[in-house]
Image (tube, rainbow over all chains, first blue to last red; front, side, top):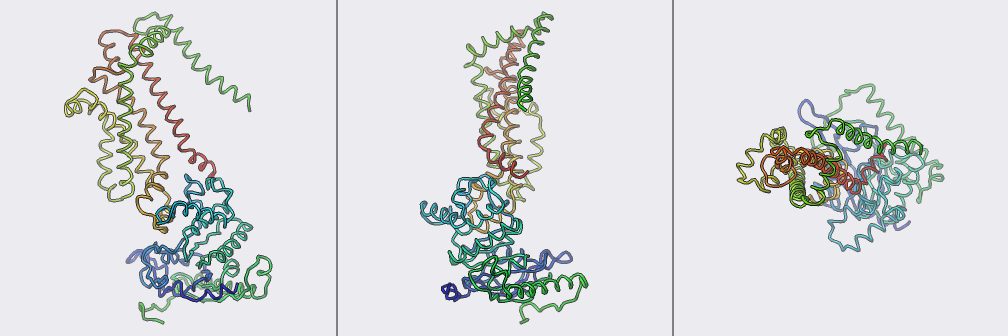
Length: 284
Length: 258
């Protein structure tokens, strides 16, 4: 476990003054106003916020799928303008991000087909990735023959086989049942250690964010800014029973909960609350 | 449950048999040369199609259907994918597609003979291919458009190149709908084949129909009608069989979504 601390050496991802407005003129919707935070190499960072605060927009900008209106995303010193090779994305809708006509093997193989690696090496990557999510037995099944949690594990295996240095996850466990969610949380923590991967994880589940992360980025209500960045000082490895029983866990959970509740209340009381409009790029 | 199944199968066999028996009884009673006995038609059918004229008339017709359909499939999918993928392409092609699709096949029959200077295979295959194109083309365009945006975003996030994206995602995603279009085209192929051969030909099933009409031979005409019906039916059954195998995933996936 000490090796993990040692690997927190470099800067993986740097997001500065990110803003995204959809549409133009009168119909413009400001989704993100000013979001800045960093992710260290090997770190597990969760982004939480009230629903509709632009979490998915943020992740799509970071992954290079969506062009931000303002601000910068820098991955290991390179500006992100299109999906980077060293990044993989896991969506919430596993049922829609997997190909129903392809076997589990071919689903995992999909992003490797165009990579300049040998054929047998590709096969090996697929098998290793499926093994680390515990689906070796189902390699020749179709995704729709598996349960929801298993399908999401296929999507995770596909991301791992791609060998990214950072994994982005957009509410990946929002549509599985509570028990499966716990298993998947532990699975993600395990593969993070096994593959030494950095994870940026978006969720609306406060408990989940505290349980998983090294740091939590709490977003404010849309138009979105960063409300607070909270270091999570919980011992590793995490345990569904032991970790959740700790005093620190309860305190962190309460703290995040209050922050988000306050944000929600703000929205309800004064939906048009005038906020200081930042001059682009000049504010601290 | 098994009793209901037995009843179902029994009815599936008994009803057609009953209809054929009624047909036979009625034609025996009628005793008309224009509407010959079913047994006479079947004997004629066997003599004409199963032995002597299979090579001279049935094979050319089947060749035309096969070739026409093959061209329609290749062109329909080949054009349908880029049109389905591009809003701009749809904008300027759809009015033309809608125009030609609405054209009744007989309206174009004379002009194809004149333009293609032939009453041979070129004209017939082109005629069949042209009209079989539209169901496949329109269904391909629709199928391509209906692909799940999450899947395309997944492909983009993994930097999957365009040709791989088309081969691995777009084409399979559209395949159930392409198959539906092809099935329509199979029956259209039989229709247009008979039409083209009846209009101008020196062989084929449609030609037999024409000759028997001109020579007032009603039994061969009926035998030809029965053959055309059987042909359409068998082609459809073969197609469904192939579709079931190729698109097995689609049935399973649909069942799992329920």
